[in-house]
Image 1: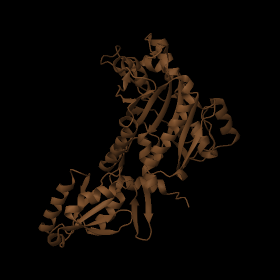
Image 2 (image 1 turned 180 degrees about the horizontal axis):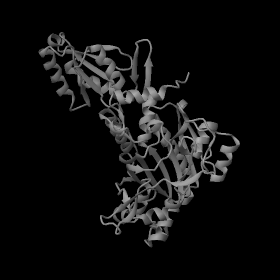
Image 3 (image 1 turned 120 degrees about the horizontal axis):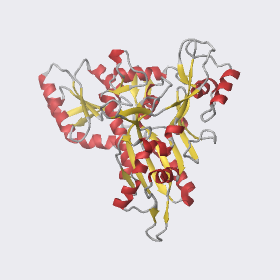
Image 4 (image 1 turned 30 degrees about the vertical axis):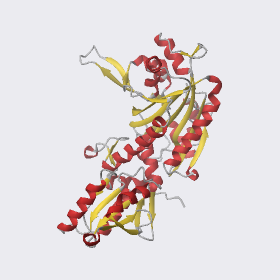
Amino acid sequence: MADDKLLDKVISLAKRRGFIYPGSDIYGGLANTYDLGPRGTELKRNLINLWWKEFVHKRPEIYGLDTAILMSPRVWEASGHTSSFADSLIDCKNCHFRTRADHLIEDKLDIKVEGKSLKELAKIIKDKAINCPKCGKNNWTEPRAFNQLFETEVGIITGEKNKVYLRGETAQGMFVDFKPFIDSIHPKLPFGLAQLGKVFRNEITMGKFTFRVLEFDLAEFEYFIEEKDWEKWFEFWKEEITRFAHLLGIPDTKLRWRSHTPDELSHYSKRTEDLEYEYPFGFKEWFALAYRTDFDLKNHMAKSGADLTYTDPQTGKKFIPHVIEPTFGITRSLTTLLLNAYHEDKEKNRVVLKLPYKLAPYQVAVFPLLANKEELVAKARQIHALLYDQFVVDWDDRGNIGKRYYSQDEIGTPFCVTVDFDSLEDNAVTVRNRDSALQERISIDSLIPYLETKLNQS
């Protein structure tokens, strides 16, 4: 049975255990912003490292870039974002609640309306008598377009400032650097450019934790191909995206692929599919795959005057490559991973965060059985020092041992190592497994290979 309180439970755990904090909380907060605590920072770093390993380091034809957040505004004009990157804004006249018209309809009717015109959205809201979810009234403004790009200015003197945009996607930096990349690296098709970093979107809809925020981390790559091969590569990367979701511990029962309708396709896309995850608020986009054709390179070539063609080294033929783009929301994935890992063990009256071992903030925690016994603390410190070159290790000597175990369960730490009085005599420790709560006695000499074997099983 679905737990309709699951999101609230995860939000509470995330704050209590140092994963995610509300942004600017001591000043009353700023909607759709969050800060990562120590455990959230480690979780995100592990996710990023795994993504980079799977899609860059393991693939010799994919190269990493790190492009600027601020670019010439002409980049966003050429890409179509200044004219097409818009949401449908609507306000309740009674309580001034503001939201996206398409999200209002989708949440109420469970249908997809992204890409419909403002008039079509207004008609649906009127015909279906959709009330304000905050005050219950039906007194809406007309939907109106609202561009998602954040504007700022470069310059320090009033009147001499130039408008620029915070990037709304990482892709454009990779297209803009296409020419210097091929001139310096001389790759052979197919090849990819990958990037992971901050992206900014002026989101209207609030709530749902880190699912939709103003500032987030996005990982994506542009895979450059010949046009004739696009369907083959689209299916290939669709399978690879699913494989990566499985690496993150997500079962097929929580996933589904959904194709965009012609109405909702982005201006640059000929085909787009979303890998959706079943959140407590329904199936929603988690990852995405788009066939961007040659739209971006062709437009940047026309608007900049730069030659962005590719020369086949065998035939000498010059052409503009087409692009397949897999996209992975890193910040959104934090909500996805926490929701998927949250587990209530009723039998043992505990909450367990069953994160894959490779993603857990800590791999091992080390405790002295009693924090007021110097000989136990000293022995535990030795073991902590022994392990931290090999693993990410937490130290915990607060409260009683039972509370420490339950705390590490909620953090998602796979293994806890406890030093007790017997350890001083037999040079062994007790190792507790997070998921089963079973304990084993392991000699300190065998501890590192034991943990390595166990951690590699996840």
